[in-house]
Length: 137
Image (tube, rainbow, N blue to C red):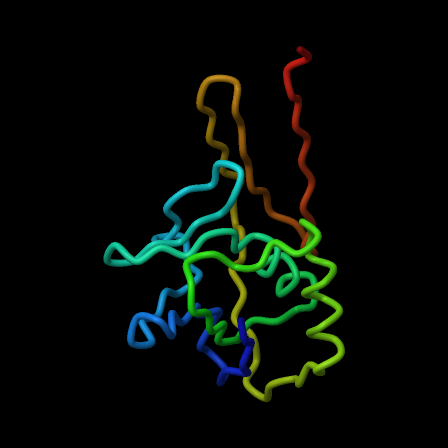
């Protein structure tokens, strides 16, 4: 796996070097599965276990990068984002000149499916909170 800088506005793009540099953008329409791992798919090409690297990018404020890999799964490493954070920090992060675009939540939205629930609400600053209840066996 190799992480390359990308121009402003590129977003996060995964490039399969083993498949003629086929690219899959890390956007919601390309999410294939999220059970135990976040998989992206475009035109039948799959990339799996993206969640740790994507978490590292979000935590470090990285909006634009090309991630090259020659297989369908990212390295799991220790099962967290920490190794990715460390290697990215070691390589360095460059601020880009073009201002970021933000999504402004103007009204609350909620979605419920059975006992599952997600909501987004207007706020003055970015904040995320969640809870999860696993059944006791």
